[in-house]
Length: 259
Image 1 (cartoon, helix red, strand yellow):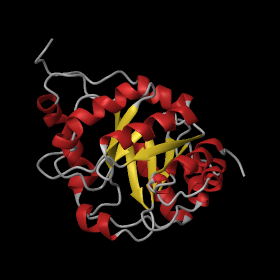
Image 2 (image 1 turned 135 degrees about the horizontal axis):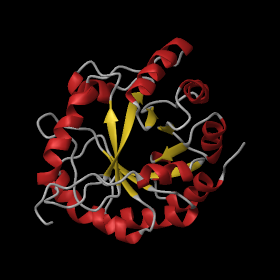
Image 3 (image 1 turned 135 degrees about the vertical axis):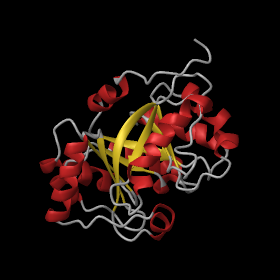
């Protein structure tokens, strides 16, 4: 009924993710590109085998003005799911518009501020019905969002500290992921690369149905294959395809699966 509080989607997207593991994924920052290039990249990524498209950015000024039209356009341009991944803002929660199939909800377990660990998710759930004006919301994929290596931007904006890539640190974090029943561990490194061994340690510690997504400084198909072979379910790339030669680079990133 129009105007009624929308219910969450059934968990069909989580099922879809489990059916498409072992894949590279195209991440597009819509705040760095014009609309036509966002659409072209999404279409090219689908054609080359990206099982879904992620629209993501740490900085998202004028979110609704920029995304209200763009997100439905991307969803119409591709047949694979379009997912959103943006950090919350205190007092507003996670920014959202109509048109996306899913949303990577970040529980920043390494934040010193409980707002970014869990309170922002409650705020988002309360605000989304009004923001979406009765439309069905994107399906939440509950993620333990963990940064690796120095990340001064995330630290200043989200009060995070970096995960130590040690057996003990991974064990303690994985215990939280299991207890909370999260859908996914999202490992991100802004200024270096996640060590593939960290993927292996998490795979040994988390539940079989909990997914691992790695992104940050993924530059080659070999980088992707190393993380997939180490236990990652998805490896996202963004910066590697932000230059003028992205059309030549994208096939290597989306077709190589093993070293």
